[in-house]
Length: 187
Image (cartoon, rainbow, N blue to C red; front, side, top):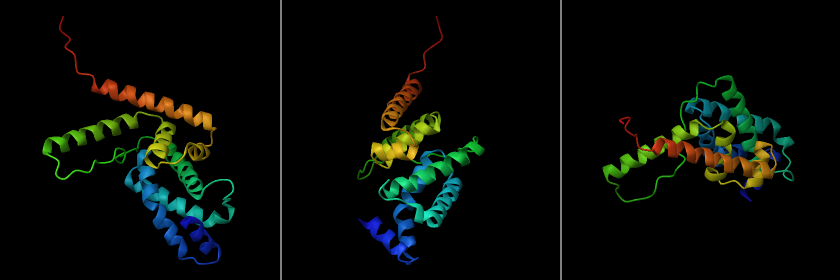
């Protein structure tokens, strides 16, 4: 596995190998932090702090307890939770959660519809508790296994399954409410 080889090189004293680790996970980490509702500047700060903590605590990482990505995202999640609790009103942006479908040349109407769908989804996600956003992003965007997500979220596997089920229901309800056509108040 590439990550384990990089970790062995770091342990052997090859400090430049750490930049490979950053390159390997930086984009995923930025995406995850953005989906938690962090601004780009906040996500950059938290990602940098995450990698600094990884560097300074790499000797504590126990591969028999969790995959490296699980450990990394646990650190990032905890830092993000702390930052967002300190500044609850600064949640500025969510990155696109729905990937753009590949097509040759979408027509303007299709582009507009996709933009509206993304906007509705971002708005709906902002209405969910951060724990729900985190679980959804880790499972459906980062594509981590449920056991890894449970480890990151520090809950049981059953609890993460329940949280995901409820988060999807909440998200569906919010999106359905937003989609219902406006009705006339005439009688």
